[in-house]
Image 1 (cartoon, rainbow, N blue to C red):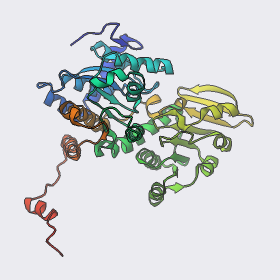
Image 2: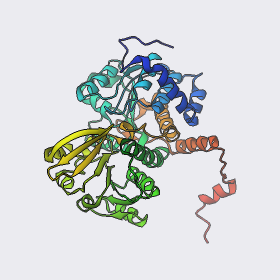
Image 3: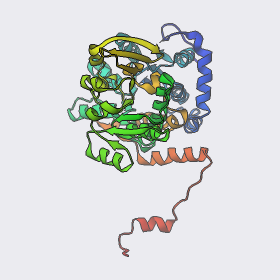
Image 4: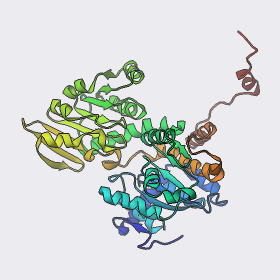
Length: 423
C-alpha cells in the first residue's frame, strides 16, 4: 500500500482516518456485489496501468468503489462533486491509504475547482463523474489531456442529459458510459436510494413529523417518485408538480395530487425539488408560502431553489439548527431552507444506503472495465452499458439476499422468438 504525503492529498483532518475506516468497513459489509467484483479481479488486476480520476461524493460507499478500483490495479485520484457532500473521516482514511484525495466538507467554489484540477495533474486515462463537472473541466480548461483519455463514465441524470447535448453539438471529445441509464442504477438508486436518504436528510435537519403534512415534490421522475413514495408511507399528503404530461399522469394514477407550483406553494408544508432544472422555486413561490414552510433540494445542483430571490425578500435570517436556516419575511412568516439548497440527502444525512449504492457502483466499476477493454474503439458519444450486466448485477444481489428465481427452459426460450406459432 502506498502511503500518504502532503503533496498527494488535501483533506480536512487526517487524524479522522480511523473513524473513516470504520465507516468504510460498515459499508463493505453491506455491499456484496462490489465486494464480489473485488474478489474476482484483485488477482488478475485488469485495470493495471490505468489512472482513474473521479469526481463523485466522498462517502463510505464511494470509498468501497475506490478501494475496488485500486484492488483491480488502477491508480486513483479523487475529488468531491458537491461542496457539502464529503465525509471528512472517509476522505482522511482514503488519503492515508495513498489515494490522491482532494476533498473536504464546506468547500467554496474556488476550492471545489482547485480540487478537480489537482486530480487532473494526475493525467488520467479515464474519468469517473457525477454531474459531469470533471468532464466539463477537462474539455474547457485541460484540453491537452484529452488525447490521453480513453473515456469516462457518468453517474447521474443531470450529467447524462448535458453530455448528450454536448455530444449532439459535436463537442464531446471522448466516449462516456451513461452509468445512470443502467436499470440497476436508475430504477433502484434513483428511486429507493433518493427516496430514503432525502427523507433522512429532512428529518435530521428538522425532526418534524411528516404525517399529516402537505409534502410537495417538484418533479415526478425516478428521484421525485422515490421521495413521494417514502413521504406517503410516512403519512404525508403528497403533491407533485411536473412539466411532463406523462409523468403527471403517472403521479395521478398512483394516488398523488398534481398541481402547478404556483398552487402548491400556497398549501405545501415541505418542498423538495428533484428536477435537474434551475428556478423551480422562485420569488413569487416564496412569497406565497405559509409560515413554517420547509424547502430543500435533492436534484444535482442548488440552482433549483432561487435562494437569491428568498434573500431579497427576507428581512433577516439565522441558522437555527445544523443544515437549517430560518428566513423571516417582512410580515413575520418564516421559511426554512435545508442544506443551503444543496443535496439534502448528502449534506444533511449520509447519502444513499450502502445496499443500493452497491449496484450503482458495481455499474461504475464495470464501466471502467469496459473502457479499459474497448474504449479506444468507441466513438466520442454517450454509450450505455450492456443490458446483460444489469441481470448479472441483480443476480448477484439476489443471491446475497438468499433469493432464488426461476429460469426459462430451452423450449420456452425457443417459444419466445418463434413467430410461426399463432394462438
